Image (cartoon, rainbow, N blue to C red; front, top):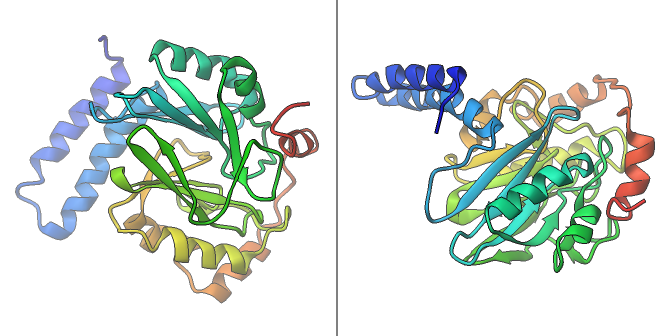
Length: 282
């Protein structure tokens, strides 16, 4: 494999940081390890990179138009896979990757009804026989409606569904306990969170959801959001507890922060919401 210049630079920086681990104080080691991730992980993940492990498959894919992350998870033994938050304009990319890897896509999963892009689940179902769509009940049309505590199985793995409303009333976080990962949708972003001023949003509900269902996970869990606008790819429970400028505050402070945002509506909301209510099928 030929590595690009940015990847090689990331590796060099990572090797430099790793030299300091053995001599650093314990409290500084997590910061050093995060530098390794930011140096190396960004380039690898943004180019169809994967966690290099023979026991499972993981891809973090990116839409540079809507800043949306799509996640492909699979069991390499059974080839069964799930795809979280696909984007309709990139279904060709996703189906090609699934075919190249020899995977059987069981489910196209949405974390919520998106307002900034049209989901690709409906188009995936047309192209991949047997693929079913999943979303929380009763937010939109889908083959399978899930509720809090439900389990989604693929191969020897499973995702736990955790209701995390507040950004919308149907937001769901999918927790992969086996691999210490959680896919948070728009409920929790890296150093941020989803807006709460439309789609039955509620700041109090979002705060309680994130603290009760996401930040209550072990501190070493990796958190993967549905969007990022600054080039970051992943965070941790430990980081967001202390570094999130909104959710590290108390409830009253959080509500005031959200009330003061005054954000414009998403540009594609009039197109996206109606389509996403019917699984992205116009």
